[in-house]
Image (cartoon, rainbow, N blue to C red; front, side, top):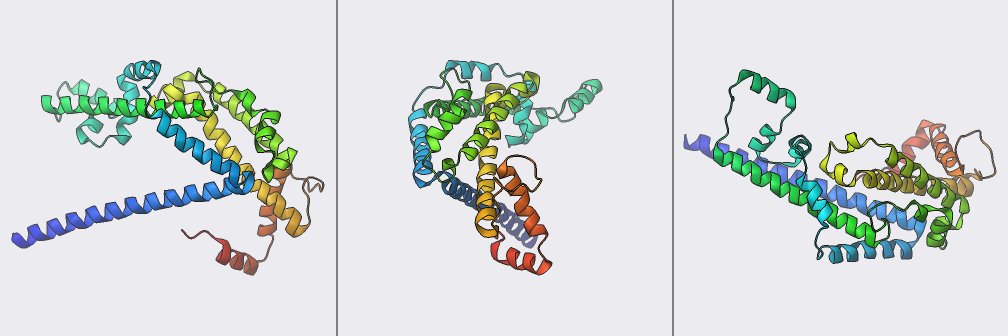
Length: 296
């Protein structure tokens, strides 16, 4: 009995260590991804501009965390229905709470049975209420601070709405004119056009769909827009480097040479870069992968 208990404890400790190590590895990969993203942005927009962006975000967080969350956000979170709070079940660790917030189909079956399979005690119910309130506070804090920082950065207007005028060609050109990629007006146009597309996309989302997630209900259209424009900004930064590579390495200027590819010259460069690799023989691909594949 003593040996079995010792083995069980050893197994439990090993499992805890494994989970902890896995979390550490995930966090490390997340930090590596952020560094890679920072370096990519710096390559396109320059060290000074991205350094200033980092500082404004960090300074904005320190400023906004001292402010009281707007009443409108608190009121909106407090009004979340039980169905809307179901969206939080994935982040709640309390088994009883996850069980309570399970899918409606299971609830209906239990209601039809007219008898709870695993009835909750009053103490468990109270614990559930406390965790729901705690996660409501998380939402208030996250959305409140994020909206404060974005407003302070002038990414949002004072009423919390995206100001699409800030993404006009002239505004973007003024901001990134001295950066490596910003010296090319075609790049500025590509980013501006992407912003217009992202804004239209954010406005087309049904409010009923956004209401299904607490974060999206509060900040949905803004989240759709920023997720879209950040992806586009990153994508065009990669394609800008491919355009430069096609011109400097292979002597092909996609702004002049028509290879029959669709899109602007950066979209064409992205496709052309892939075509060059795919048409290389397998030995070249093997060597290229050996030296340049990401390993971390």
